[in-house]
Amino acid sequence: MAEIKIKMDKTAIILSAIVGSLGLLGAILGFAAEGANTTNPTPALGICGLVFLLMAQITIAAVSGCCGCCKSRAIPSETKRVVGIVCAVGSWIATVAGCVMLEQAAAANFIGYYAVGGIYAGGGVLALVATALGIASYILLRGPPADAAPAAAANKTAGEQPAAPAGIAMGQPQFPSNMQSPPQDRGQV
Image (cartoon, rainbow, N blue to C red; front, side, top):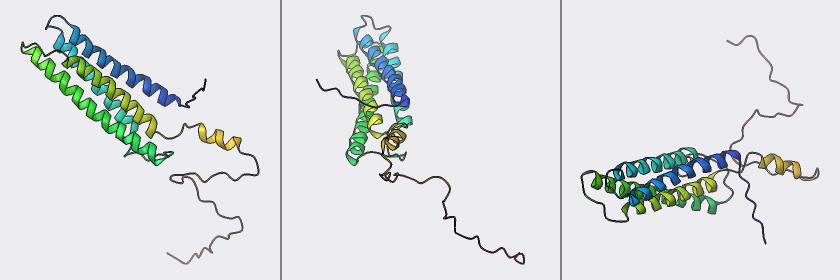
């Protein structure tokens, strides 16, 4: 059996766990509102599910850099970037649709009407979909793990030239040692 290994750094694991927990909690509250027998707790369950879904979506959007367009990173391929942006947009669409479903069902229950069956559950399913798409977009749009670059450089043999790093160059300029500094005139003001 083939074994698939995915390298994820601690930030990606922690963020996926936090956002996954918030999204799952939003979905569970949506399903609980659907299964509640009385109309008394259902609006509160629906609104709480909406709040947790929004918390998950805002967290993933803030950390990933608003659909991957705001932060510059070293993305391995253009295909991953396109798929990541599509997942991020799909996540926002599912979030908005899920929030509208949960809010409308809660509003109907709050004023005394019984929401048509499946609206809370539909909001819960959309919360799961939005969370999964948000985590997928974050993983696709993030750069390589921080320890991947030093490990790749350490594995190179002495005869090979390291690849030029991509992105913005940082640091101090390096000048050859045989350069002379320009003469300093003391008569200038």
